[in-house]
Image 1 (spheres, helix red, strand yellow):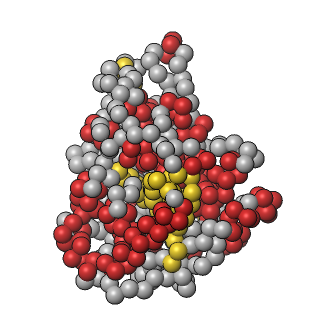
Image 2 (image 1 turned 120 degrees about the vertical axis):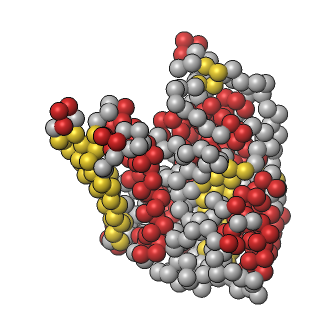
Image 3 (image 1 turned 180 degrees about the vertical axis):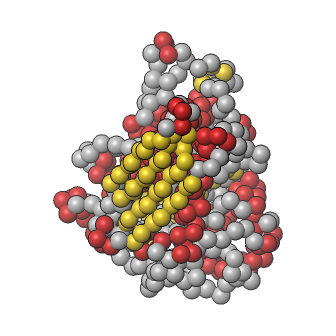
Length: 447
């Protein structure tokens, strides 16, 4: 692959002091993330699955033999500097929440009980219309949605002072909200703030958290398929306050597998007649997605990857008539051990049919936890570099990457990784790899 010369390194503010990672939602994903970081800080395990902790980046030509660890190449915050907090509609502390989630073993939980028990959720912003299958008691009340946003901002500032944190990032780890499209209230920051004062029903709880964070200059990542950051109003606020944002929907299980397999089929120009996907899961996520309106949000997120990877308009004979279906079934006995089945009907030379069948028995929160860590550290890096707005170079982590106007999202995970590594190379003034056909919004990795 040809190399493209970067400019001089960008001036990056060093990561001094504590970094607070706040998570709206303190369920299976966030408690698994917190527990894992602490387990590693105690030297009891390794950061498997984390690009920031275990990944390398090649510099220069292949023959140069330069492939440093990413955490040694760019000035990331250290895991030892992280402190954790969050909000949840259930009052359980992180130990109780992790125990209820059933992701981690009793052995792991017993080792970390002292640490996790000290992390208690702040009352959540919650609206039953947006998550119909959950009801909790640890919920904020206020005169308006503007009042709720002010309460979240006060929570953030109070946590920052109590923990003596120098910097804060927020990563949404809460439930999937019901499907929504941008409304009039989302078209400008002025309209959105008016809507907050008037408690516009089109403003979701996730957007109240995002607004509060962006008003305080805090980076925000959206780990669910909710309509949160991908609205003109919050993009305007992010740009106005110089805050990096990214999302949406962590790429963990079945979609992760699709973004691995589909690029290979396309590379070999093998046709696809149909791709049927079904899932069973039993954690709180499964309970929420048992509601058709919440499932619609997830379905839209999961359906987009294949079309963007396979490009049926460019290859109509191979992919133009592909049937693609996604199903999610709530099955309580499965717990957090989600099972994804894929049946792929393909065809090759002379049109002869073949099939691929994938049965991925995954642990959803185990796959998501390192993504929370990476996103927190990379968003903090972006903030210290003076980057703002949508960080397209972090598309690697999401089912539905947000893009700059005029750019189609890139779903091929291998190209996404190259974009991410190129962003790091550019920050440090190193040459970038430029494979054919790989484009991204240049301004998103420019301070």
